[in-house]
Length: 609
Image (cartoon, rainbow, N blue to C red; front, side, top):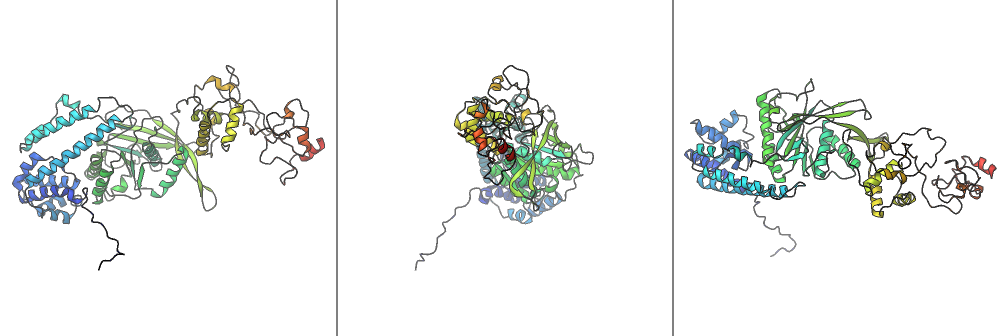
């Protein structure tokens, strides 16, 4: 009897990317164990890199070593050699090595299949590189063709090495000086500092902002923003937070608030994966499928627990494991590492430095966020000229909607470049208006209607949507220390006609300092440097009762009482109604006697009235 209320689960076909895909490789390895004399023939068909799984590359190397030494080639001998090298776990463990002995058959036949799939992967990679080159910001017609020429030449050389003689296969891989021009150059990821398909390292003493610098790099690569003036190639970033995982959220949220955008395309794995453990191969396979542009390992010590870091031999094995990750993904693998007691070199064995394409040294001076300077020094660039130091200050960011148990705000910090000045904004863009509003100290709390009114008063002609975008940019920014040096952050060649568009001195309260910071912007076009205009009053429409800033009778020779905010004459009728400020000067209270907060200066004005 049919069961109608049972949901039938459709048959799931075998995953093409699953274990079955690698059966041909297993048959090659198992077949060579049963027929060792076939190993020279297989060497003429395959290179070690034709194996898709790093574990199979390792096993193939060990099988070849046993054969060359005249030793038995079987699962037991293979296991003993792997244990001697302390690489049995890398090869999949005892059970996996023993299981390979069950794969018999014709290794020559399956080697052809492994080679075919390797060629298909090479073609797919060729297509990816062509697309990346053709869609790069500096793309030029014809440059991607060199990839095709290089691919065809390599295929021809490899075909010539299929004679079955391993020496012929090795000779086919030799390149002459002309062929070197076809080798792809390093592709920049972050300026001249970091490159794709390379191993890089950030070193520095503990607590010297290494992770903050790395998070900043990751955020810029993920979003595609320039890194403080340096070119950035956008791509996916994977961050292994093996150390300090609990603090990563605050740092990311602070970065997002500072830049007003989500840290897109950055993925975090909040635990360590041991480089010497079997899970590292799982990580390699996962990253091979994801194909990120950048992989961060924070820190080297946390992914190599149990390794004697002063041993060049043991550290060399760790670096080779990290290199396997790089080769599988062609990403920039960026490792964070602590320095030793001296503070100038990476802690432990020195063998790691030879494998690095780039090494950045991070240090800080200062005792609080206001005076700390973080310096990034380029300690090594294998193929490029070492650039100068890069320096950053810190900006404190208050996280919205978060507080500590005692009520204090939750804060973090972000980096602000001390070397790079933003490019001059084009007049009329939202970014340009943001600068103008900052220059005039227009409050960050003003909404679009107020800012539109303000622009109209000072003859700044812009479309409404651009003004609204400028308001959104300002509101996204942190206001914790917005006033800090805002007036001195103007572009060096700000248009001189801007002076006539900025508000003039509108007066101020009696508590305003008599001296204000100087600016290189003259009060009139072509004039000498003058004082920065103070914060302008609210541009609310003038009231018929005389409480506005525009058309106020008190400004036209009126001898009425003075406003307690701006010390300018008020409309007598307005003062007789009990107000002691212009409505535009104090829109929050209006200082009306009927209001409970009324009282400051009212007696004086009642007497005057």
